[in-house]
Length: 66
Image (tube, rainbow, N blue to C red):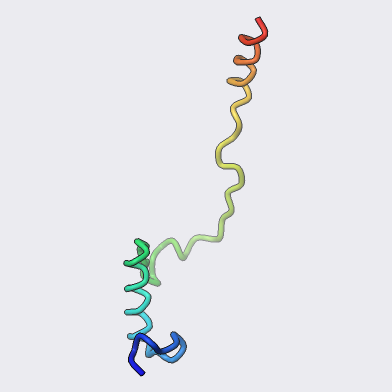
């Protein structure tokens, strides 16, 4: 059985990292090193990052009703 047919759990650490690099390159993803500063930040969830602009809609409604 060659390296490509092995399950990830049976690969050595070096083979595993190389496989992850190959997959990430194919998918166009960038792998960050384990000591990257982003891993030091607490988890964050952003809800509704683009608030609805009600004033613009009100202006449109006023113009359409005239």
